[in-house]
Image (tube, rainbow, N blue to C red):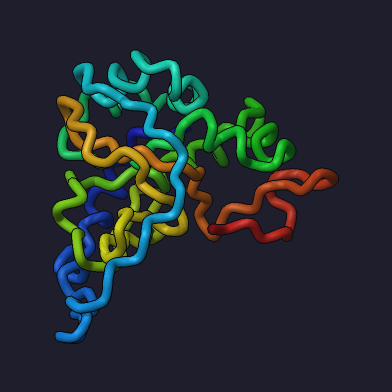
Length: 206
């Protein structure tokens, strides 16, 4: 497994010009008279509390046991304990369990650790991105996995791809954790249906 080499090479590629996020659509002048849309009902925040590094912060919470075990399995925990200036979009245990059972089982199968690593690095950005940096804007940023994530701060609730950020801006010692309500799957990863294996042609990117 080449986690460290993957991380370092992606760190250079991850620095897509972030100014793209400042080019969000400007609302018309009349928009001020329109009441803002009500936020959809969100899952409860896990109230994640900073506790040192990203790794230590996640391990101290009972709501991130699946993510913590997945980071250990892919040898990423040490990186998230020491590498500064990161943003991690962290799915809760509830988010992982919302995956179809065949997908979750495949992700956590030790023989599919490379696929799990690809999915986890898609949740990681080599920039410190508090939501204040994309508030009122919408645009792409490159993940360590090298695929783009779409950040959207234009609504009542900030989003990444189709996931809501249900607890924003948890400031760990080495970066920012954004708690999300869905597991993010890069478009170049195919997860199994009930009768298929990882790598089958069934697309599941989202």
